Amino acid sequence: MSQQAPEDKQLLASIVDRDLEALESLHARYSGRVFAHVIRVLRDPGAAEEVTQDVFFNVWRKAASYSALRGSVTAWLFTIAHNRAIDELRRRRRQQSHLQHDADLSNRPSEAADGDPTEYAKAEHERSQIKAALTTLRPEQREVVVLAYFGGFTHSEIANHLKQPLGTVKTRIRLAIKKLRVAMGPQAQESVDFGI
Image 1 (cartoon, rainbow, N blue to C red):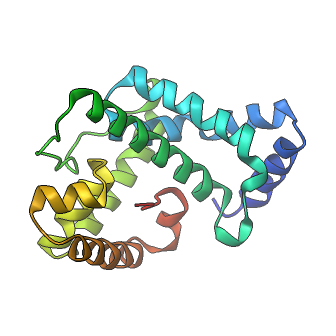
Image 2: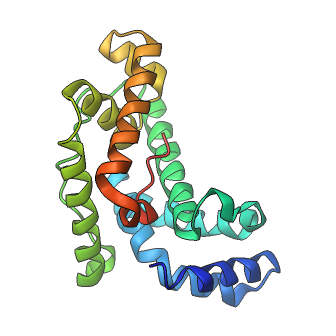
């Protein structure tokens, strides 16, 4: 992935200049992986397709907001994807008017974009990395990370759900994310962002 970083940055610079072909190239390169990430959060192929398209629409609109100082193009792209998927999950939750209390979604089977074996393999690899990293956490840290990252709960919702002080929840999440980043290593951080 590091070999593609300069090309990714060039594509993004061209998108800032309103080059539609550059957006199409970025979409062709990453849409499958974005879809695979989003579907793990939403578990709805139709919604995942819409969110994936929305992610690239946001890239078109916000390409100028990318800063290399804050990470790679792929980390930025997957942060947009994750945040957009979580927004959709929260929107659905508001419509249902209740919290889902069994949010331990870390054992979900991976689903691949359009049945592509390569995308399936990548998604499975990412899932196994995340699952292995989660086992390094203390149970109370793992619980809050699963609720936040996989379940889409806000910090306040987690505090209410677990009947714990908000400060405790925030501290556990912060410490857990630090531990996960160490456990997963720098290459995994390129494609998996714990932006919670």
